[in-house]
Image (tube, rainbow, N blue to C red; front, side, top):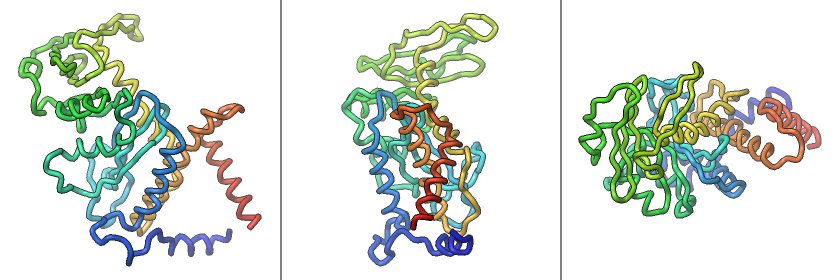
Length: 302
């Protein structure tokens, strides 16, 4: 394809009919194509027992009503995308944060979790979240749907036991309380204080590990399990960062489309290929190059 033709197509690429789209939908520019991608993610693969929820930030510094500022991210300004991933970084569902909603009964974090995990409930799965999502009401809501919750916890949340929140701990010590329903709130001190909530483990479950120096340490089992379950999101972002196609752009929805197509979708396709292929597993960089060659061959046939 000539460069001028590519730039012309990219300049006028559009995904929706503005006259038919609802005016109150902030994602009307990309809603249709995004829903098609998500539908294909769900029908292509069913996650196992462990699923994880976290957010990613697509770089964007232009004008946008729901642009976010997250200081601890590499790109501090951008579009926040919530993702639900299974083992080895497969993105099963995602949603774009468009600002506060009118749901006053539930918090934003709880609403996001319940929307993303819809379709995977009532099957005994374990959901891993960080401290922005984890709360006692969410734990009970998931228990009612036969789903466990394991996550780090902010100690200023409501409904937490004062004995655990105010406990003074030395390195290696932990304090925990468990309700009759199996909700455990735990506070553990290692190099710093780590608090967690779990409905999968008991308050007395511990694991003995060996450090690189050969020293044995005792850690709460929920902390070990959380570190394992939470790694799927990190793996997904890491795989997407290899050969990224994000460039400077004047349209936010175009940049979001490229991220979903060339990063999330390619990472998912790479995961499915390596899982079901009878050949040798392929690296993500080689997989991207192979896709580009196939696309080039198909254009030549046209």
